[in-house]
Length: 533
Ligand code: G4P
Image (cartoon, rainbow, N blue to C red; front, side):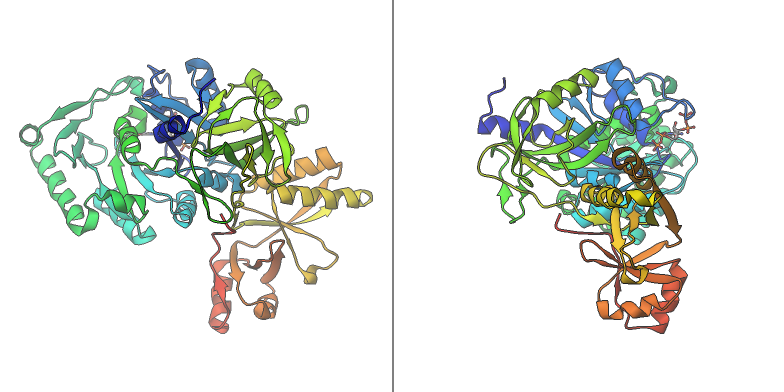
């Protein structure tokens, strides 16, 4: 049993760095995750980097890593020790299963690593995730990956950050040698050259050899001079490193590397430990900070329901905000004021995966048999009660009319839709024009529909018929009086979300722009996220 004194909690929280990697599929997130874990104390070798064909998705990759290396992993977070720090890397599923869950994970991190492919720069999924980081004011470190192969110019990639997302790049390293002929990096903090050494398949942490600037210039000649000159251009143009600008999320430290060769990864970890924000007092619904050493509190940011009908388990993932979690404690669910026992849940969890015995602010706990828990719920120990703000709803991108396939099950169907909405599985929209209360379900990612359909069938015995709607562009209609303008279009309509938000939907961007041209007073706003998070 760990004594939970205030200083103990504060010290443990101070060791935590809780972050997520945001990237587009194929930028190298799984590879970077492996490479990061390679530096953890318990690990000595990354093992074979999987072939894509043999890969079963990040979750199973992580479970495999857990078995082979003894690090603590839930399907939502990877935890490992690095020096004196405890790193919590939260998974943001980025592939076919991209959904609102992916965004919600970002409510549970203190910082993010934006991983870019050197040949591609900013890609759509990265941009979507970055929008959420910006909305939440999450500080972002940028790691430009795959520098070992031909890619774009450094300055061009840096310009893209400034121009497309208004984020000032502050490079901390600068690659020497053009992409594809990578020699190493110029460390802009101390001016030395870090030589890049290829190790067999990146299986072990690459040895780091440093040369002073004089030696580097002798050895590398023009390549060194050009790297020095180019990097000065950026620092002169406002890219000088400034920790405060990183923390206020207006600028991003940039590192270059090759995750597959484990080059630049240690630097990234060191940077996270040195610079990334530690867990801090979270604001409750009344905007009062919950001190780190207050009694245990946490909020649920993700609920995962087993897709396997044989195991209809539900795991709720919660981020600890204050105090100490000890397995077996009985906590209160602030939404219902009901007790929630963690003991049984954790034992079952322990048999299947790893058991979390103790957790501190910044850590993620997985609670099984958590059917009473919803996304956004607060758990707390004892008094005073605390409630953290609910999680926001995100701009949906997929829409479908939902009808019961079997009309005799209409009542169960309605109940099911209500339940799925309350859990945040899908958003529910309605309009008088569509009549008879037929709901339109909306989702950030199409997999949310699959989950909803499966659950309506399995749990409510009411299979659903989904008719997909062709909308791709969504805005918030700020003036309800203008509803008829959008509704008159034929290729657009207004639907009301249960939280009261009026969503204007258009089949494409062009349709929206034409409507705006014809109706210059139409008040439409972009919709990243709303709510009180
Ligand atoms: P993801 O999780 O973001 O989708 O990306 P993942 O790690 O699966 O990496 C996507 C591809 O990019 C993989 O190649 C991976 O090996 C490669 N990759 C990752 N980091 C680097 C890097 O630093 N340099 C280079 N050159 N490649 C990198 P693949 O061909 O799809 O699979 P594999 O057979 O190589 O595993």
